[in-house]
Length: 181
Image (cartoon, rainbow, N blue to C red; front, side):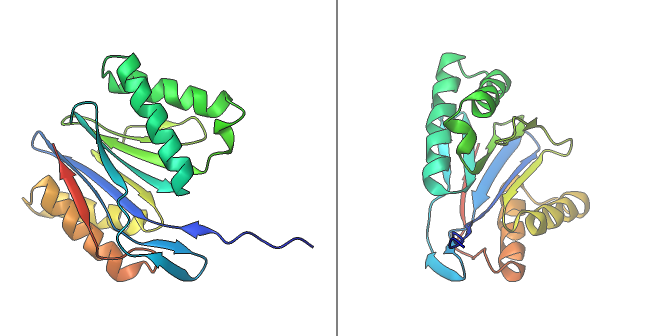
């Protein structure tokens, strides 16, 4: 029997929209199998003249490839986020090479939050919170509670929620990077 490839579990990315502001952040841990390979990986990027922030989860080379493609779609469609996301998802689903990429993207603008998946999904959560990666459900739960029961800013919610995920998820650490719009 062939050897099983170690699974890369590498991140928690969380984006929040609140009061006309957006924040997207991630932890810095990259894990291969049961080994932490790096503590300070940067998994978020500003795109299209600073109008969008995106984060990625999954295999790094795959995610960076998708990020480049997404940025090209934003340029091709004059910064229209919905159109660029749908066109990337269509390419991702139908292109023989792209179909093999194992990654997800979370994108925020000042008024929209999206998740773009490799299965062709473009998801806009009703609550303005996007979460992807190994610790995403922990961060999502914390963010929803903070949105409901506090007046914290989008950036503060992202920071506190990622910190909560880091305390629970072994694939998430507290080397948090956040960008705001």
